[in-house]
Length: 325
DNA sequence: AAGACGAAAGTGGTTGA
DNA sequence: TCAACAACTTTCGTCTT
Image (cartoon, rainbow, N blue to C red; front, side, top):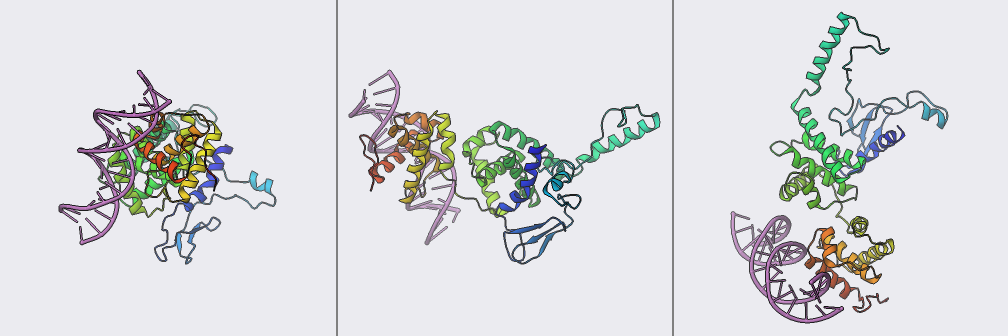
């Protein structure tokens, strides 16, 4: 319960922290949430962007922190990964009331009718049908890739936005889901290689890339260039390298960036090469092929980056000790 | 024999006329 | 729309450990 609530608490921040142009008037990207009035207001010009939002705040006035904890609202948090945001009522299939007693025959047929209509109405529009399908695909994909819940939620939110913008029409749901997940990972600086996402999904790399770019263009999302450093802990653990090697890798990458070695280069290749250099320096050598494999680049790329790093960082080729300057 | 190296040709995506 | 282009891949022969 605590875990669920904490993700709930973060959601407001999550939603406003992705860089979307929110205000049609002044193009501001900041949104101020006024939960007591149920409004979202543009941070730039004060335009009310949406009202009648659900107040997720405390139910009663509270005079101390313990009190405000105990008096928070009940119910599950709003979830974007559930197609109806988890807000629908579910009628139980058992013919018993809340105290466990059998229902009277008339009551029973009434419930039967309600249940029937609930099932019919639950997925009532084409958008909901689409969402329901997309969310189950999202669930499948992200559990296969081991994507944590907050990133999943962000992906779901992005998907909702792309439905509203009619980006999904004419494209496969799978492709758009994979693209939103890939984007969400990058926004949260936990990037996954495009190939990895494509493999886990049933769509090819090209389609995924196209959908991803479509997403960037139409949702006006600002996504930072993926930093090679973000990959190294994953790669290092796959290669069973010690943490000193990881630290050295980070150092190498930072110095490479300082002298402009990284611009225009594939972050995956850079991460791979830096790991290669660090592994040799600290005597935990891995072969170029091993590293190339986990980084999903070729040996040749590892080699080229590695050579540049050694040359430009004045690392002595014999002992591979960096020469301080 | 495995790993590293380097040349050469091919690929998919971007850019600018 | 198309050609030029940069980065990366594939392939393969040679050198090194």
